[in-house]
Length: 298
Ligand SMILES: Cc1cc2nc3c(=O)[nH]c(=O)nc-3n(C[C@H](O)[C@H](O)[C@H](O)COP(=O)(O)OP(=O)(O)OC[C@H]3O[C@@H](n4cnc5c(N)ncnc54)[C@H](O)[C@@H]3O)c2cc1C
Image (cartoon, rainbow, N blue to C red; front, side, top):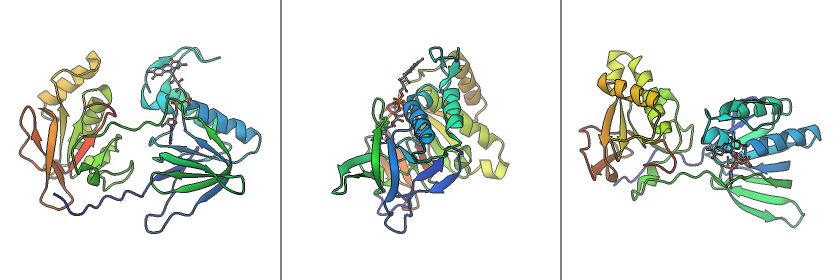
């Protein structure tokens, strides 16, 4: 079992409606509380429009969300599904709705603190509110708005004892176990496993495999993409199924059927390697990164 990990669990992403990234907490030092007039818990459509309305009233605000991107359910669960019941917009996708809300909000440019699960909310003696997230970041605000929709999107995690030590937050390049999609560049130089059977998992595996196909032969020798699912049946549409079959036939992607029930370490102390599968066989390779792409699946 590993005794140490390079994964930095305190880093998080802070950006704003213009998309400029910043650092919301300094992992080397205890983060200072952020003071603001208004805080919105959530960055779904209700929160984004609320932030716009606060902007019109000249009330500065910050938005917090546990997800790595704004848009709530629309962006996380159905980015490409058409929405037909929005006023004055005959049809648009969840992704487009999010982009339009962010565009509308841009003049006010409120900070978005992403990857932050708000875990406590308490009234202070001075009447203001004190919030803390699971990363330890704190906020103090006069007004708190809860635009939490159906609740925080927290993935159902892999039930492998000790694996949590390898988890990283979205955007952490050292992360070995992620519960959100990662940038395609993260696959370079790594053997990546994408675990899941829904469209998000298959799309991520294909995107990573496509990225690796463009790399040099020397680079390709050091990386691979494996799709891990408990069944040969995927919950995907016909076009995606065809793309998956083509990638498998061309050897750009491997498919392993099974459910991980344990893991061992790779050669380096920080390398987690899923080791035993209930069905199928584990490939004879060190899986340096285990991507668990679909919250609630696997
Ligand atoms: C498959 C599907 C299809 C849909 N289609 C339509 C449609 O066609 N038309 C329509 O009108 N509606 C549709 N809906 C419903 C619509 O998506 C929701 O009504 C809408 O997303 C609600 O917006 P919201 O901002 O209130 O909440 P949400 O979208 O749920 O956003 C809330 C956000 O708050 C965050 N959050 C909650 N608690 C915390 C916490 N403690 N810390 C940090 N972050 C937190 C969550 O992570 C989330 O991102 C659909 C929903 C689904 C699932």
